[in-house]
Length: 187
Image (tube, rainbow, N blue to C red):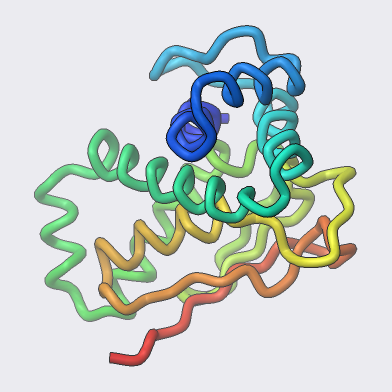
């Protein structure tokens, strides 16, 4: 998986909880060093960090995951999507731009879904089967705040500012897949 899944989660933990708690979550997850910016990361390391955050701070894990996902999206826009491409997406009809961005996400899905199966059902609905970040985890509510925030930041920045992404089903709840849907927020 891409290093931003760990680097942005670490940055969010540091921001919300502090340096000592970042050290604690990395120790809990048995991650002994953070990757370089261009160093792929094994998905089990990513999963252990994300799950440790949810286990250690259940009341703050949503905020931490959302901050990390938004940071990861910004990192993608800063390093992977040229300014020219961002401008072209902004000028396209919303459905066309969303379809093109979703297609690009599918082509690069290994970076955020690892061995999971990422399916673009439509430009407003994504499915992530066997999400390695939550495999084996049990929860009462959806927990993929990182992914929802990642998708929302990309699409609200590049396609339309009122697009909102919500996870509507989750492997951790016992659902067949993690499903993310976009809606348009009220003006």
